Image 1 (cartoon, rainbow, N blue to C red):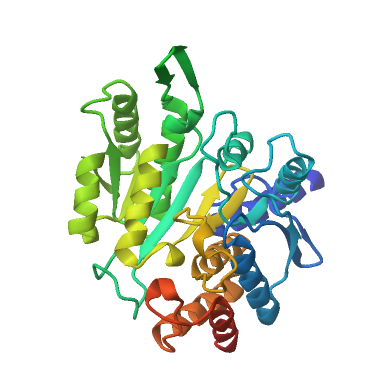
Image 2: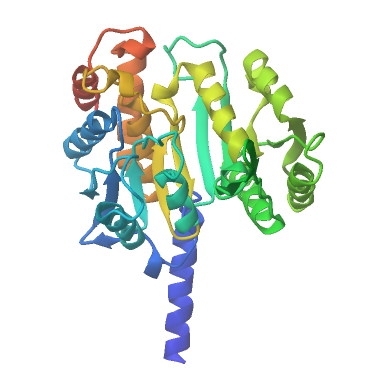
Length: 368
């Protein structure tokens, strides 16, 4: 009897914690983020290009804010072979810690080199990519009152990696869409809308041409929508979506789509609100969560110049802190970034300013 009561009490505590977790892992805490003595251990992969500079900014801000997070850092590159020891150690760290923060890894355009980003999402089943495109006061943007969330299926679609040459000069690339994974991402999108007070989900597709693959995606999402009567839904062909985004982005709230469309739409969203440097993002699975900039650019052309905008990685780390339920630290850092941009006018060259990465980081720390 005592054992039964104790178990009920434990389950209630777990349910309470899961209820407030920011749509991250939805498994029992026994396999959740690792926390020892009040300090979380997080896997850090700075990435290529400006990754080392922006990761250094995050570490400086976390240190100044006394955030109870320790990083296990792995200096991987997109050029690192998949069977490399460092890559395997990084994956082992992610499996152990359950939470990661990463910059963008370059994927070489050459035959036989697989993308670590894609491999990591598949191996850890990190199926939901989330990018939040929202105006930041004081930042010049093409449109005002923009606030929408892009939810992208991460593990199939055109990124399945199934390509072959059937005849010299003829290549077949397979697009994989399955009902179970579409149901999963659709429920994630409608759950996100429900939990965050959003009113509408837009299903993005190309079912007028890809009648089987995108038809399955569209019809499955429509079926899931019936389970959420309080959330409105509509659907839109992807090419029309691109036009609507650049002409009237305020109409969008939550958007759900297959992998390739999400890659394109997230870049359009970044351009609408001021650039890739201010868009945070996250990738969620049932056990793991990895946070990275929402618009995936390596920015190799400005590597080492101390001109990179660290906002997107800092704001991605804010999403990570909310996932870890370190909400006070998250609010403190987010407000400091917005004050630095909006009130102080400290901006890196990508936002029309002249301040360096170091200047921006110091200003954020002053505003904590």
